Image (cartoon, rainbow, N blue to C red; front, side):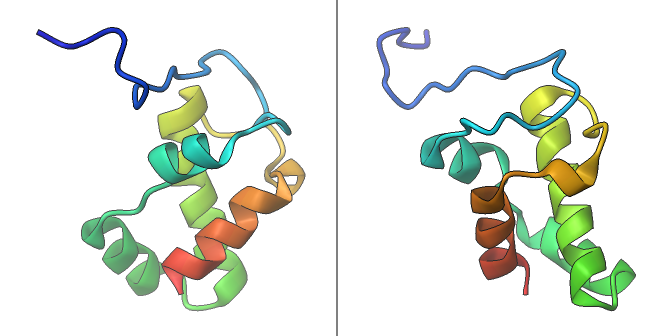
Length: 88
């Protein structure tokens, strides 16, 4: 049985249309983590860095808010920086 007092549990923020500007570092690491499969897919399909970052944002936002963001250009900078480090 899961421990509801566990501090590592993070809530999804479903039904938002954009990624929230107040996204915490824990949320970024948890929801925007890219598996080896994700990274392989991104590198295979996205040949240029901006496309790789965009695909990583889409994958993470789907896990975090349950949909693709309405405007990917409004992605908070900490998310972009994190994804740049892990997807390149």
